[in-house]
Length: 535
Image 1 (tube, rainbow, N blue to C red):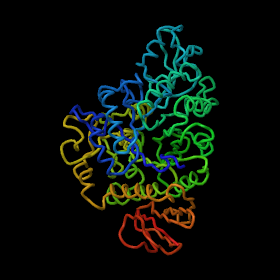
Image 2 (cartoon, helix red, strand yellow):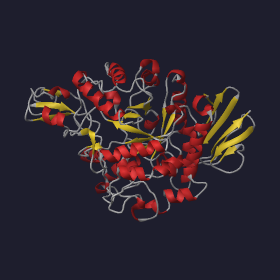
Image 3 (tube, helix red, strand yellow):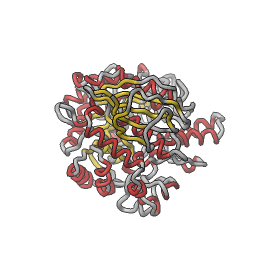
């Protein structure tokens, strides 16, 4: 029997920016509930919510102070229960974001742990003595600087692979693991549909050996978690794994290993950064490289014993239409092209809020306009190194996380219909023309392309189970077959803003979806794409 999540399309909500219901400028759970009919109309099967737990907000909720309480800015636990129930009535499941590599420094465990070296929760975190009066070793934080923070009251450093307010949990301590599993079961009992697991490949870290990802105990921990919580249920679990290869992803996702349903792998998402450098060190988009990576993950993963996730966007990534498409003249066409290219591959597609209407990046001209901690830290660090301000702002405009986190554009009213108050992060000025209301009113909008793609996945087994074969084409074009039994579909996408040659390998029997009217010929217009049944 096919698991529900292999046939599903998941929609990610960044609650702070989705819909505000009370005018405080911050999106909330009642706001999400009020928009469920819109999401049902789109056709998605599950909603992944970025964290809504109690948090000081140093990293926009990914620093959790209480896993079993809702932050007041988002509502109450009663609001959470109401959302789960209302979504269930519409056939939509709720996927909770699980952040268990680290907590907030405001979590009661850490507050208690830092009181003394003998505190009961001291070993819930990773503490080390200074080395020659300095940090214990050279481990660095993802957000810049050392991963070690000195804590004067006890004279030791604690590890934080992200912000200083996000101390890493010590997964080698069985008491930590059992506390996490109890918390997960708390949410499972509420009737959620699964977990998205933030930076899950870091929980097996060994700081003394400076091992971050894929530590030797990672997979044993996940098998233990599976057995103690969601194993034997139909819950969907997806792990964020920046360092995954197809072989590593197979380990996570093979059901015989009893770990996770699938992982997010980011090889394609690193194609526009210089090798061995940080995401801010930009290089030009190369369509041929994208084809190679997408095909690699379609052919090197054993889908009979594993699964994959498909995505262009999330709360950490810039908008794909601005990143590798054309958010000006060809905004709608290139947005549709990336949608069709991705959604007809093998794996479970994820849509990030606003992607379904082709939302774009929001350029800034001054660092004062930037909210994102990672972007601000990078700016200050590189400015001190002498990098010009203009270059730093350009990098932030291309890759900064605020691009994804700006409020969803609902209509032409003030603040795009997101709030009646002042939004926590400014709305993209293009909301007057680019919004949900306009998309729903236009039969050829990006929204209806996504709606059609979801329907194709639900109605045709070939999308879920069909084999994948890459066709030889010019570098700017990606074309592939999906084959199941005697059925064969051809998917073709021009990844560029220029006309490209393409020879049809066989007559088209039926065009299933396209972003341009008419029958495809021997050339492809800029960003042209289609999928068709062929002989």
